[in-house]
Image 1 (cartoon, rainbow, N blue to C red):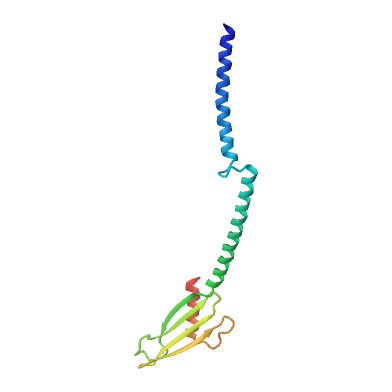
Image 2: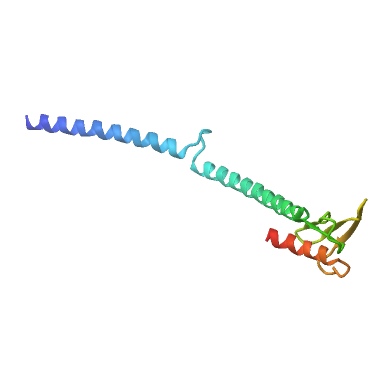
Length: 151
């Protein structure tokens, strides 16, 4: 009778361990086989190829980003409008004004609109960070305020 009980225990243990072994084998196949029924080495090789493609695309995106950054530096960064009165009589309001339009490198244009009572005169000047000798004090002040405002 003892042998029958021992046989039942062994058969039960064998049955339970077979179920666990089957589940383990199924999980192993699911983990190590891809959808294309490749083995682990083929799956790793395909992942490496995908990683190489991703690195290539990332380098292209990085280059595109740097190009766009360089192009964006050519856009207007510093802008300012300064109203002033170029004439000493106090009868006129500040109807004259200076418009400053500069890019990232502080190169651009200054437009000076001087009101003479019945008309405006427009004086455009190119601004270069190395040479600003021929600017009026109002134009120089407008450039300084534009840079100060955007920093």
